[in-house]
Image: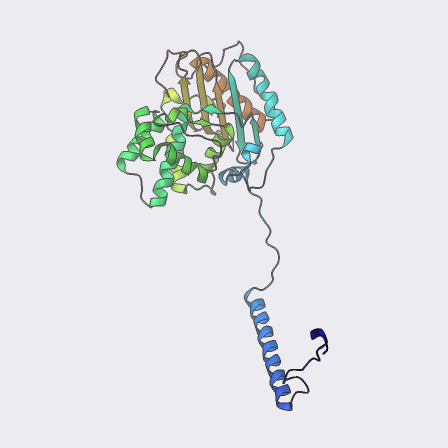
Length: 355
């Protein structure tokens, strides 16, 4: 008996020559399938007609910051965003302009500037961490405004009163009330993800003044207050900047020193002594004007030997960065180690409450 593998193959019953009606049926089915495929292809072409490639418009620097990306350092580039490095000559001018400030002052500081008009951006130690002191109040109000936008409800009359006290007079009790209202650090952290602040860590518990931040993040926050691409609505941006333009006369120091005489600038400052009152944190952020230019400036510092010395350095740094980015030359420094307008509010003062 032949092996199983040698068994003769038996063809199925349907093998062999097809009958005429079978050939006709199969041909008809194939024609119908081809017609359906062609029809679907034509439908897709009509639904999605080819067109010329969309040309992307360039985005001003301030809008890139508001979108969470930006130039300067790796800190300024959000994950997944396209990096926009600063022009080397801008950073070189900024470093050169700040050299006299570093020679004539003590303490550690960082500074950054954006010229909204030209898109120029320059930073000095943009990723260095500092405690915010009272400049976090700008972030607190931005968080509250975002939350109200999401809920589609305006600020209450009490919230408006507290916001005005917090920004214009730097009132700490008002800040604490609004810090509680936004959900403290958790609320701030969630809002900052939308605002693009990637390296700002909220203070624990009630200690909003011990929030840590960078110049890069503060420039982003200022961009959120001035850019159309901000998560904040036009009404929210106008409202917060309006409060910052009307700070109490005794607090109109810091970056306002670089403003053109007679123009209105928006500013928020912060000052915080360490536990032993031997050194100070002095910060200043704001939007200033120089001729027809709108400029965003952030100056953060720590280890200042006194409040007035830190304010003097903040003002000197603000003048230097604006002069470098606008005029391309170092700002002239007053004579003497501390010959600057010490605080714009009557000179040196004794210790004050945490701000």
